[in-house]
Image: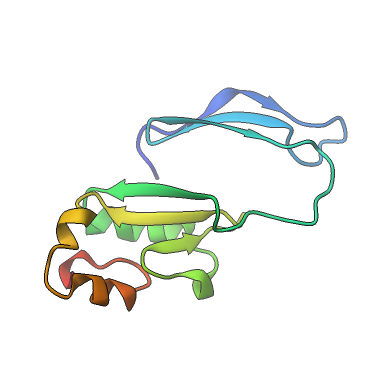
Length: 119
């Protein structure tokens, strides 16, 4: 799905195999670590944490959107929420340039998935 992405070598689960204590992974060449204490929580991911993917073209935007989007009512302006509750920003690599087009910002505000040709 994302080039240059893979799980890391270290994954630690609690003894009861419920949840995840620590994991490493790479997404699009960026190294990440994820940690949890193994105890139950009264919260989940929020839009305060999002992962941004800068796409090379509409085909990549469409492919990632299809693979990741799991909460249609959360989709807005290139943001989506996946099946784990993680927010993603799926945007064209040249978004700043596209926003210079007259009316582009206003059109983007009406979009769920970004449609490059409409900006």
